[in-house]
Image (cartoon, rainbow, N blue to C red; front, top):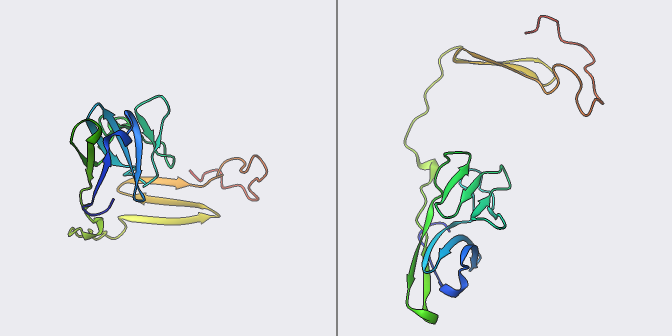
Length: 171
C-alpha cells in the first residue's frame, strides 16, 4: 500500500489471531484479538520478500533471508533485537455484524529523496586488488579482506581443483 489509501472490510473477514487480509489486490498481515487489530503490509522491510505466516504461531517469516516478525508486537525477533515493521492504521467501527475495520496506509518516505551527501574517499582509503580468477584483496580503514570461493582446496563438490596453487606465502 503506497501513499495514503484506505480499505474497509467487515471485521468478520479479519481472522482471529494471526492472518492475512487480501482486498483490492493488496495484502495485509494482521493480528486480531477480539476487536483489537494490528496490521502491516505483507512485505519484509529489509528485502521486500512476501512474509509467510508460520503455522501454529504468531510469527511471519521472510523467505528471502529468514527474518522473523512477531505479529503481536510488529517487531522482528530474528535477528534478535530487530527493527519494527511499519504498521498500517487499523480502526474498528460499528458493532456486532455491522463492525468493520478501516485500514489506512501511511505514506512512505522515498529513500532516494535524501539530502545527505556522500563523503569523498581519500586516496588509498579503499583499494581493491585483483589477484587471480575470482580472488581479490580489499583494503579499507585498516582492514584487509581476501576473498576467493576456493583459494584453498576444491570447489563444486570436489569436482574442480585449482590448476595453479597460490604461492605458499600468499597470506
